[in-house]
Image (cartoon, rainbow over all chains, first blue to last red; front, side, top):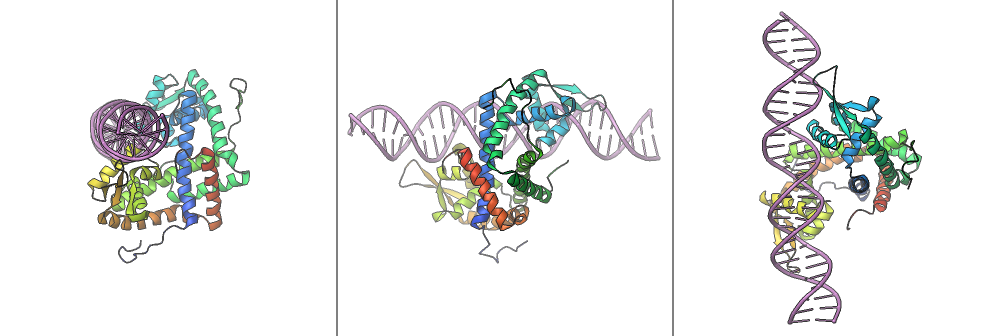
Amino acid sequence: MATIGDTPELRLLSPQELRAWRGMLRAQAALAKALDAQLEAAHGLQLSSYEVLMYLADAEDERMRMCDLASSILLSRSGLTRLVDRLQREGLLERVACSDDARGAFAKLTPAGREKLRAARATHLAGVRAMFLDLFTPAELDQLGDCWDRVLAKTGWGCCR
Amino acid sequence: MATIGDTPELRLLSPQELRAWRGMLRAQAALAKALDAQLEAAHGLQLSSYEVLMYLADAEDERMRMCDLASSILLSRSGLTRLVDRLQREGLLERVACSDDARGAFAKLTPAGREKLRAARATHLAGVRAMFLDLFTPAELDQLGDCWDRVLAKTGWGCCR
DNA sequence: CGCTGCTGATTGCGCGCACAACGACTTGCG
DNA sequence: CGCAAGTCGTTGTGCGCGCAATCAGCAGCG
C-alpha cells in the first residue's frame, strides 16, 4: 500500500495496458448490449432470462435449485426469485417443490420454455460466434481461457462454487 | 443464418469455446465487483463516479461536455445527469456553462475532486494491476488488445467515438 | 423432545439506470 | 429573417437489481 501524499507522480497505465484494460470493458459492454438487443428483437427474451432457460435445459431433469441457479447466472437470490417470477408468469418454467428439503424449490422448464429456448439458442449462439468466437483461432481461444482462469483465481471468484 | 425447425441438433459450444466465453463473463463480473468494493471501502466512491473524475482529470482544463463524458463512461445522458448531480452535491465537481454553445454544460473538477481522485487513483490502479494487468506478460497484453479491437470492430462499437 | 444455529426462498425498500418526452438552443435552408 | 430539423441537457417514469429483514424448515446438541 503506497502512502498517500509522497507520490505526486503515480505510475499511470501504459498505452498497452490501457488498451488491454479499457478494451475489455468496452468490448464486454458492447457484446452484452448487442447480444441482449438481438435476443430481445428476435424472441422478446432478455439475456438474463435466456441464461436461466439455458442452465435449466442443460441440467438433469431440466430443473435446478433456486440457489444453484442464482450462483450460476451470477445473480443474487432475491434477483433470481423475481426473474423466475417473470418467467413463470410467461409460462416458460414452473416452480416444483423439493421433496428432500421442504425449504427448497426447483425451477423446472416447461415444454413452452424448452421450445422457446430451442429457438432462442440458435440466435444467441450465432451471435456469440459471429461477434466473439469466430474472431479467434482455437489457439487464441485457449489463451483467452487461460487468461480468465488466472483472473478468476486471483479475484477469488467472489462467491460459492 | 440457419433456418429454424430443421436442425434439432444444433451445434453447441465446445469446451474451449465455453471456457473462453463464460470465463470472460465471469472474470469481468468478478473484476468489476472486486474493484468497486475496494474503491467503495477505501474512499466511499463508486466505480462509475471514479471514472467520471478520472476522465475529467485527464481532460484539458479538467472539464468535459456532458455528452462526451456520457459516451466515454458508457452511460446514457440521463444517467450521467444524475451521476453528475451526486458528484456535484459531494463537491467533487461543478457545472460550468459553455460559452460556445448555450445548450451545453461542462462538468469541471473541483480541487476537492482532484484530491479525491488522486487518492482513489492509487487504490484503483493498484487493484487493476493486481487483479488483471500483472497477470499477463506484455506480449499477452498486446494480444488481448488485439482481441478487443476485433470485437469492437465487429460489434460496431455500439455508438459514437 | 426442545432449544439453538444455520440455510433456502421470499419480501420491503432504496438505488442506479435506460427510455421517452420536454424545453432551450443551434444549424441549415429557402 | 423565419422556419424546420437536429442536438444538448434535464426530468418523469418504470424496471431490474442488491441488501437486509423475515419466515419456514433442517441439523446438531443435551
